[in-house]
Amino acid sequence: NAGVTQTPKFQVLKTGQSMTLQCAQDMNHNSMYWYRQDPGMGLRLIYYSASEGTTDKGEVPNGYNVSRLNKREFSLRLESAAPSQTSVYFCASSEVGASPYEQYFGPGTRLTVT
Amino acid sequence: AQKVTQAQTEISVVEKEDVTLDCVYETRDTTYYLFWYKQPPSGELVFLIRRNSFDEQNEISGRYSWNFQKSTSSFNFTITASQVVDSAVYFCALRRSEWDYGGSQGNLIFGKGTKLSVKP
Image (cartoon, one colour):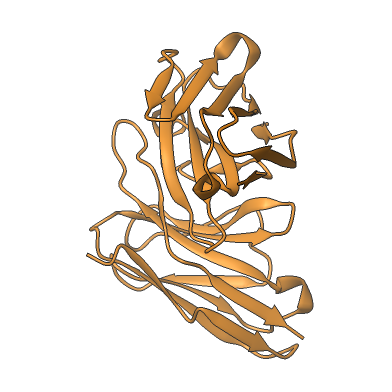
């Protein structure tokens, strides 16, 4: 049981390049999330997927797109990377029900855009 | 608006001292949920506790304890007899009730975190 996995762990991009961050969970959770963490800012939600086939914008969606490929996988795409997207990206998943369950986080992807 | 404030940016203590991390939240919801997460130097986020807004009982888990007070909108976290392994960034987070708003309001609203350094 690996929990939430993310690839890659580190990435350096040049301005304008594109890339996709991959996330997968093996806990059969319905909901999945992408956050970014910047120094002194805590974590901020980029996009989330309440269930397979649905996605919604979070607090900071500009410059990103997402795909909920199936119940296990939720990818984040940067179409044209900018230095402002230098950050640590975390994927998370949770179950849903009558009361919210805790979110389980992946190990993070450290992205640098030069 | 939903907001979480962790006013203490950094705290430094000596091993075996007790330390309290403050968390103050803002919400107009009557039902909500509060969380604490730990982020050690390795970078992963580790879930510590979840508390419902209608349950004000304090909780103790080993050296960790949490004091939830709705009257002051606070959910403080105390580590008793701190250890070097407690050194981490600690985040408090708020989540709305899905049943109040339909669909998923499942995102967590995080505070900016408190960096705790425990020195030997």
